[in-house]
Length: 381
Image (cartoon, rainbow, N blue to C red; front, side, top):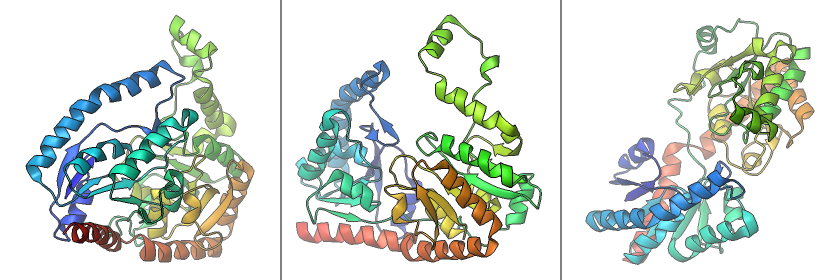
C-alpha cells in the first residue's frame, strides 16, 4: 500500500504494519479547501497560495508517477480529501485508489472548488472513506461509492485510569478547583476559542475556583504594548487586529487570565484531559472532533455546540451535553451544571467511554479499512 499524504503518518503505518500490510509514503502538497484551511480569493495571500499549488501540481504529479511506478503497490491510499487531485495518477496507472475524506469540504466561491474535488473523487477514486457522515454528505457522492469509518483513538495513550490528581499537581492546579479544558489545536478560532472564553467569563461568576486549561494557545500581545509602525496602524484601521484585540479583552476581563493555564503545542494532551472535569468542544464550523473521542476514552464528559460531525458522536444526555451553535450562555450553563452535578458528569463520562470502545477502537478501524482494501484487490483480480 502507498500512503500519500501531506505529512508523515507513523501511527497509521504502525497500525497497518500490525495487520501485515506493507506501507510506503509519498509527501504531496495539498489542495487546501476545507474548514481548517482554504484559499480565500478575496485576499492576495489566498491567490498566492492557490497559484503556488497550481504551479507545484505538475511537478508533484510527475514525482508521484515515478514513485508509484517504482513501488507498484496493490493499493494507493490518499490520506486526505485535499489530495484528491492526485488520484488521477494512480487511476491512470491502473492501481486501485482510496481517498480518505478527513475534513469537511467548503462550498467556496460559486461552488467551483467543491465541484473540482467532487469530480476527482467521482472519476478517479475507486472507494472513498469518510471519517464522519457529515463529511460524506458534503462531498455528495453516488450511493455505494463511499463508506463512513470513524477515526480511532489510542486507548493506551488515552487511558481513563490516568491519575487526575497527579496531572493537576503537575499543572499547579489546586485540588478543589473546577477545571474546564479547551483543546483547540490548530485554527482555534474555527474551534470556538472566542465562544469558549465568553462562556468561561460567565461560568467564573458562579464558580470562583474555575480553572481553564488551554493547551496549543498563546495569548496575543497587549494592544497597548504593540510597536505601532505605520504598517500596523494601517492594518489596525482595516480591522486586521479586531479578533485578537477582542480576545485579549475577553481574557483580561474580570481577571479571567488569572484562572487560565495555557501553553504552546503539547505532546501529552492526555494529561490535560486527565486533569479536567469537563471537556469543551465549541466548534463553530462543521468538522469532526478527535477531542470528543479522546475525552470519551478517558471517561470525561463533553459539552459541545450542536454542529455537523460533532453531533454524530456527542449523544445528548448519554455521552455529553449539546447546545445550539454559538449559544454562549447555553455553553456556560452546561459547563456549570456538570461542575455542580458530579453524578451526572460521571454518568456521561461512562457513556462516552462505552461509545469510544464500541466505535473508536483502533483494531476495529484498521479491520474496516483493510476490508475496503480486500474488496478492491479481489475486484481487480
